[in-house]
Image 1 (cartoon, helix red, strand yellow):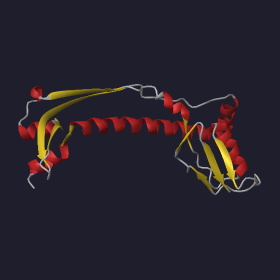
Image 2 (cartoon, rainbow, N blue to C red):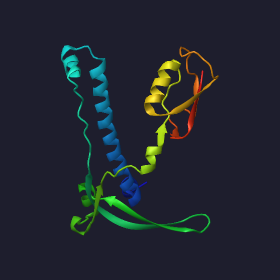
Image 3 (cartoon, rainbow, N blue to C red):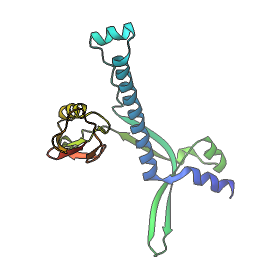
Image 4 (cartoon, rainbow, N blue to C red):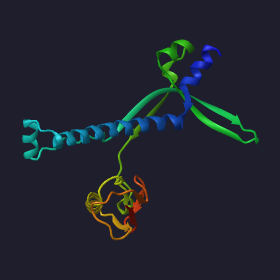
Length: 192
């Protein structure tokens, strides 16, 4: 494969895929920030360091940082690519190739003639239907008493299987399973 083909394969991508990757990168960055804040909060409550204990006693909480919006501006060469599948269906796709110094030098490309893609990602409120959903926590392996407290705190209704069991019994499974969505009026089955 020629140097030109390798270069195009690496940098040329459908425009929608480029936008999706940038958005995913922003979401991953926000996730990392949130995860670090939660990790710091857990450290405050498990540490016996004197300073951290004092911070905990006065109600200290780690700061939550957010990416309120992200703007990306990308110089790129745009091209249309058409493909024909085995059934004769033609697909047209807009592809973008980022313009950097290597691209400019290799193709004697004038950056003044490139297209500029400007993206702005803004956070929006979650859909209102999300208030009617909950995520089943992982309570498998926990004592029934602990699981009950957590589920009550989350507002998840539950039934026991079998019905009359001691709170010291261990949860063996749930239906729906941990990580699945459960609606506000849906009842979780706890198996012990």
